[in-house]
Amino acid sequence: MKLTQVFLQIEKEIIAETFSLPALPAVAFKVKDAVKDPNSDLNKLAHIVNLDPSFSAYLISLANSPLYRGIDTIESLPVAMGRMGMESTRSSAMIFAVRSLFKTKGQTCKKLLNKLWKQACYVSALSFVIASNLKAADPEKASLAGLMHNIGMIPVVIKLVEQGNTESEILRNWGTVMMFFRKISVRVLAKWGMPDDIKAVAHGIYEMRKLHSEDLVNLVNLALWHSHLGKPEFKQMPPLAELGFIANHKELNLDTDESLTFLKESQSEVKQMMQALNF
Image (cartoon, rainbow, N blue to C red; front, side):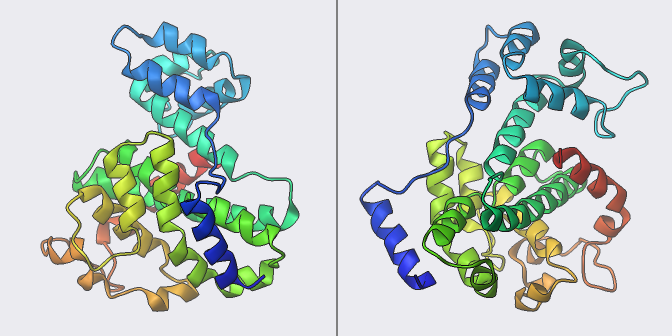
């Protein structure tokens, strides 16, 4: 089935509320609710995390990563969570849950979803570093928003493969596919109960020339722009000076490649973030 026909079919299913949206694993919702509960503490949160051995192992690994690493190596969950704190544990639960959605047994979907995951990780890492340097948003929230910027692509890619589209056909029309996914991303994030500013990122992603009212949208678009540097699709990107965020922050230093100077100087931090996300 042609891509345009699949898109029309998806539109009809969305209107009829029969389109299948990805669901988060239960542990992510439980951790999110526990962090919001004023009566909750790290001990109660640890009890919830312990119910999922894979997530427990991921948290211990993350606590020992360059992002959080202290003097001593951590081997127990309570100590790991104590080092990270409740908010970081909540963000990590969402990261762990989102990663699980990019995994599939189907070979064609696996390759395409892996491509999407790598892009999501890179945008997430760049968003974290940009937020840390510019103080324009909370770095952990920026990282999570960057990780979820293309979340609507998961059901779109799965649907395209189900309808007989090959990997080469989908990749050949990747730009078109990428521009279609935004409304689905918003629906996915609404279903998950994500905050308005993260939903705003899904709605405004790739609208780079616009200065959005939500700083988080401008920041993730800036990260997305930098993620395309050196790639064929970069030809479709507007000049950095025309991005709404840059136009509104003329004091920012750009290097000879017209990218943010501090990002080139922060490549080791970006790599550390990428390593932490690629578990």
